[in-house]
Image (cartoon, rainbow, N blue to C red; front, side, top):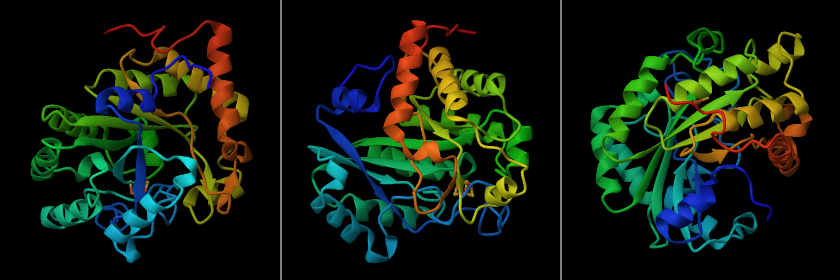
Length: 306
Ligand code: SF4
């Protein structure tokens, strides 16, 4: 495989854990305060019924059974020596602490699972939950992925994300102080955001003690509010060229030590409305690498400490 001009997650995990390690995506049966009525019932305008985890295992089969089935399956050809249990769907810390402990323990059912990763909203992490995660961090690799999406509160409000930047800042610090890896999840292609605003989001992330970043292409899935925006002409997805150029630029401005977990989306072909290029992940990754190499860019080449 051609070397890429940014820090990959696979290299980081190999170095940190000493093994080739991949994530097993789990649907832990969580919901989200932005969908269950606590904050709103609509959810973020881009959120699909699967809670942005299109390929997660099915919770009803039981978390342990689902994990064991995944371990026994070819995992899409991504066989590894070790695994990380990854609660991807909805808000993976949105439950009482005892419930969280039971669900996390259910996933940690095989000695080859040496890590716990949880995706959630910044406003769904209490100090009690940080204490719980810290108990796992004593014996496992633990990371928490926080949905930021944008550094603009205005865009966040327009997309009904209903979580201010201040919550992100607070939660990053709470987790990082306990030695837990924090991963910022951002989106490129949000309505009303141009490249300068995407760079402002990268700058915002750079100034936090996060270990990694996930850059996700905004795509339109069936059954979302964004699908209505797209049909009515109120949202036009980014072109392939715009997306790949913007992400190449973001990586050039990313803090040099950040681990890059992802640089595109991974939509289900069955539910994707647009943009079609999103389904060709290899082409997107190659184009970003080629743009960086052609310009002589590498991760952090434009980063300046502020
Ligand atoms: S925070 Fe996540 S799970 Fe909740 S509505 Fe938004 S995208 Fe969906």
